[in-house]
Image (tube, rainbow, N blue to C red):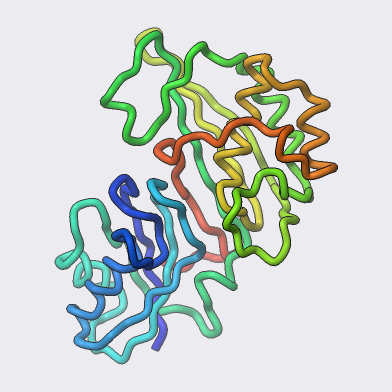
Amino acid sequence: MRYVILVAYDGTRFGGWQTQKNSITVQQILEKAAEETFGVKTAVVASGRTDSGVHASGQVCHFDADISVPAEKIADALNVRLPEDISVLKSAAAPPGFDANRSAKLKTYCYRIYCESRRNPLKDRYAVHVKPTPDFEKLQYILHIFEGEHDFKAYCASGSTAKTTVREIKRAEASRTFEGGAENIEIRVTGNGFLYNMVRTLVGTALGYARGAIDEARIRKSLSEGDRESVGKTMPAAGLTLENVDYGFDLFV
């Protein structure tokens, strides 16, 4: 039988989602916990791979197992064997034909930055310090240019195995809050799929425009011609969180 789980993790110490030889990964830890819990080797498939250092508050995964544990109790059973920086938030029986990766329709990432005169180590784990403060109105404006279907070749880091670099961004927007004189900005990007480092490079390009370092024509050229020299810097992984995966229905009713 197939089961689905909703997973949150602090990606700071992990080499990303996918199992690899030279670093500890979230998939590796989850599969070990599943094997210890169910007594058999269990493959855990995620909605998509997150890069090294990237966090998740809503990663969706599935696995197949012949077990007697009630579906809604699987989360508790796994959490007993998971470290403090990974937690299964919900679990359920998967609907017929469900695949955590192939069935996903939309994914939403959030990139967090904070703007203060000096770096704050209490924020650095989940946000990135940016100075000087970018023009928020310009940031909002330029993010909408990325909406729609584009070839994001210029925003894909080397090492990607993607068959195509065309992706559709449904929504790209910024919001902000103020706290003790500091400005906190969250940039959310929702799309049907993302390339290796795509969101972090998109954010770096948008911030470059908002701070006057990159003009609009250069950004449009990056989308029309795939010119890597036209994009901004790739932002650090710490600010990025996978927030939600949308399948068109609620998996955990």
